[in-house]
Every structure is written in structure tokens, then in C-alpha cells.
Image (cartoon, rainbow, N blue to C red):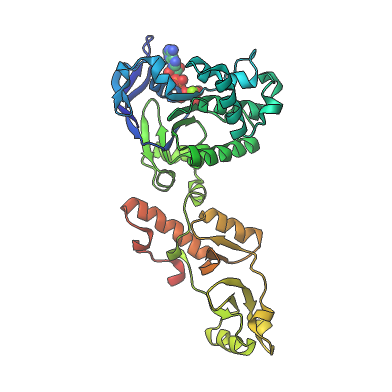
Length: 385
Ligand SMILES: Nc1ncnc2c1ncn2[C@@H]1O[C@H](COP(=O)(O)OP(=O)(O)OP(=O)(O)O)[C@@H](O)[C@H]1O
Ligand SMILES: [Mg+2]
């Protein structure tokens, strides 16, 4: 959808802002450009809507070399959220949002109706906020208006330059989540600039890590965190990249351990004997259909005449398969549990222990590096030794 071919930009004063950039953003994909201040992120972005012209190479949008496209027509297809929001201070929120539809010749009523719809979409009630001026909004609300404005003409491509830059971390995370939810429905092709690696990892389907004027690595968040291509990237993503990677690595069924199980309708005495044979102190309690009901300790079972179901305790720590490893880890910490159950809908799949969690993380790094599935990776774990 957006393709850079050996693109370079040297400003008239001789500053090389970017050099030999080649990468592609697929249709419906969200790519984040991340790097330190002055590394050429904004320059890269502004070349896509021809606010800046490259001095080398070419850029294609939808297969077409944009050098030959009328910039005004080009910009109709490209929404732009500029750094520092840039709302017009003397126009109301509604009119700000309707800017582009009005520019491209929509009837006033239609443009305003569309603007109201978009404000609603980004979580601002148009009745309350539509008639306000930008100065009467909080920083987070202004940023939402910026996003609504960029989406107003329903462009297939969206350029976002530090769209959540000017707000505190809590509001920022909320805006990020809201945008991800929105993106899941509108599926725009997005280029999002940030200098924050956390944001890049959280938002991007893929990340371009910029050094000075060039891309050091272009890959998925998991791959950038797992196998940084250069020492520069390793330093940029931070010493805690293992921890960050937990949030982008999904739990797979093959990561799990199979603990002893007991069934709801089973006599406690039978279950107690089985646990004793296995030398285990607890069992997961399931229905005969394999649905997770809870857990039971060997101590509770011993000497009891009832069924397992009567003694089962509620399972506090559980996560769905496919959730990030970080969620499993956080459940363990929150419930002070040594393991967490993993389910697929109501069905119990197995448990994740700290050792298995570590193993899953290691396997996923190796799998990415070798280009194979996680369960194909050979691994000697400490617990096997
Ligand atoms: N009009 C210009 N003339 C000369 N140099 C420029 C011009 N605009 C930008 N630059 C330089 O080009 C380089 C890249 O700038 P750019 O704005 O693309 O950086 P950035 O990665 O967006 O930085 P930030 O994170 O601070 O927004 C910088 O060294 C900057 O000083
Ligand atoms: Mg910039």
C-alpha cells in the first residue's frame, strides 16, 4: 500500500534527514516508526503526503508513484494527525473535525454530520463537545479530535505523528487502546511515528527502528525485542526487553504443563489416593466434559467422604490461551499463585508455571530467529536437568 524505494532527503542546507529508506506498509497494516529526536521520522512521514519532496528514490501509494499525483488529490486519500495536534483555535471542535470533508467539497450539512459521527467514534459526545473551542478541552480530548479529524474523509491511509504525545501516561495508554480498537474495525493503512518504544511495541503490527536517518531494523515487535539486529537496536529497546517481550508473546497450548486432575463427581477418597501415588499436593478439578471448575488440595481430600466437587475451590488465576505471557505472569503475582490455569473457552488446556513461562519465552525467541513454530524448537530446560 505504501512503498518506499531507496528514498533519501537532503534539506537545502545540506542536512541529510533520511538516507536510502526502503520498506513497505501492507494494506490494513499499522507500522510504527520509532527512534530518537531528529532521526528523520517526521521527514519520512511528510514525504508520503508530499508536504516534503524526497531528493532521492520514489514512494508508491497503492502502486502509484506519488511524484506524478496531484498533491491535493493525494492528500484526500491520506489522513494526517500532525505532531502537537494542530487544531485551529478559532474553530469549534465540530468544524475542526469537518475540515477535510469541507475542503474536498462535501455539502456543509453532510460534512458536519460526518464530523459528529467521528467525534462519537473517538469517545467525545458531539452534543457536549462539538461547539467547544480547542482551548476548552483537555490535552487528551484535543488529541482525540486530531484523530477524528484525520479519519473524517474516510481515507484509506493514515499518517500519525506522535498522536498521543502530549498527554500523561495513563491517558496515553487509554487513547492507545481506544485507537487499537478503532483500527480493528476501520482497518486503515497506518504509519505512526513515536519516540517511545513502549508505544511502538504496543501499537505496531511491525516496527521500523530508526538510527540516524536510516532504518536499523524493520520487523514485528516480538522479533525486535527478541533478536535486536544491531547493538544500537538492543540499546534502544532497553535492557528490560525480555520483560517487554512478555507482552507481545502469546500463550500457546504447547507451552503448558499437564497437572494431576480430579473430576467433580469423583469420590474424594479415590482422588486422594491418586494424588498420593503421584506425590502431588493438589489437582485441577474438571467436569467430565473437560471444563475447568477449580482446584482441590490433597489435604482437603484426605479423610473426606464426599465428592471432589464438594471440596473444590474456585480458580482465581486463569487466562485464555492466546493471551500474552505477561497476563499469565501478572495473574500469578496478583493471586500469589505458583501456577495459572489456561483455558480455551470453558475447556481446560493445562497450566503455566514460572518455569514453563520462561521456557515459552525462550522458545519463542529461538523460533523467531530460526523461522520455525515454537513447538519445533529444541530446548533443554532447567527443570528437565
Ligand atoms: N527544513 C529543514 N531544513 C533543514 N533541516 C531540517 C529541516 N527539517 C528537519 N530538518 C532536520 O532533519 C532531521 C530530521 O528531522 P525530523 O523532523 O524528521 O526528525 P524527527 O525524527 O521527527 O524528530 P522529533 O522526534 O524531534 O520530532 C533533523 O536533524 C532536523 O534538524
Ligand atoms: Mg518529528
